[in-house]
Length: 371
Image (cartoon, rainbow, N blue to C red; front, side, top):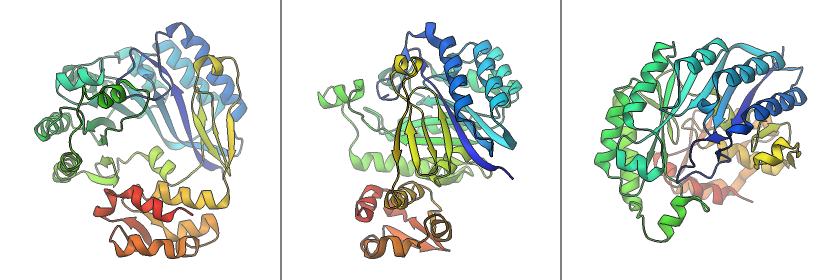
């Protein structure tokens, strides 16, 4: 029986760089799209593993929905020819509202894509403008309706909280508008101000003011309480799903399962090696090799905790022991005691997990667990 792995493909093209984005994405490079798809498929041939089947595929960006349908068809059909896909594989594609078309969605369906993720972010026009988004909320509605008409039922919406000028009432309205579209999954991300972005420049200059920490915490609680009332289950710090609709690809990454990454800036994880392809688009197209890092046993144990504690179920002691040859207690010893005493982590049914209080202080927990 073949082992199951994940497959991530990065599509770096976008219409305009968003104010908060520090991902490898490039506006105005449409002339490179065809060369890029060909380069990704060449890389795929070098990375395909004969003893592995793809259990999850995630097409991310950038804006994958900017690719012309014919190029997306070439990309997806090429991946199908190169990799063996497991029966029932979860295959996701990110889309930006206002950029999808019936033809593009038809190509996705024909090539086995069965889950869509729309970057909706906020329902208020002023917040979308501040973020540098190119869509309106009306286009979110239109894109979701178009997706359902094309046959897609498993749909995620990305939302953001903690934005400059955003209020609890703004978020309440956004949640209401999002839930009216009947998504199966919602990702509610707190804003992270990354250096080198427009957001960072505006915040550090004082032109934009972020909500106070307590305000953002209240927004997060508003997300949790609202979504619980509507039948969503929280399975990760920022992710909520209706029963059976959790994103398997992301969950497998948090469980530290192996995956192949293709494309500019894409990362992969196989055995004890992590690699990252060159983030510069021209470097990738010119064949610059990926940078590889060998993960030590100690680093691997810490990664299991860092990633696994993001999930509400926590880290399975049995799975940890099977992966690393030692139990969580044997690996971290007295470093567990302080966060346990502080009520930041707890044991439950063989899992070590963050408490509700610990979710707000995850970084503090991880600092305690570092060697």
